[in-house]
Image 1 (cartoon, rainbow, N blue to C red):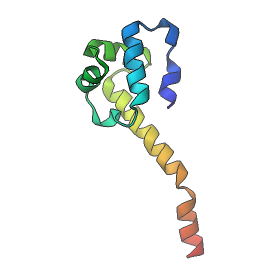
Image 2 (spheres, rainbow, N blue to C red):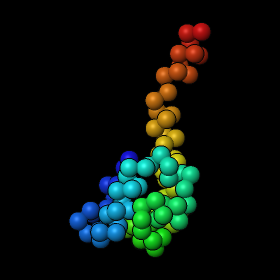
Image 3 (cartoon, rainbow, N blue to C red):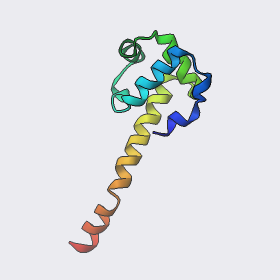
Image 4 (tube, rainbow, N blue to C red):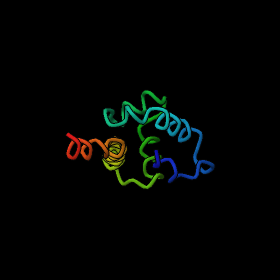
Length: 91
């Protein structure tokens, strides 16, 4: 997912890298999780999660989560764009 391109990985601390790796590997779970859940699963504290989210350019966790949801909806919608065309004109 493209939100990972907004961060210079070399400038992250070890804890932020750990959190980053967890987010990268579990993108599908993010819309259903709270900051506390992510911190617990990644074995970091909530402030580290928020620090990483701010470094990625998001103002809040809600903004980050909405971006993930929108991006997933866009990817899902783009794969099915031909279906309405075919059903409208060929049925």
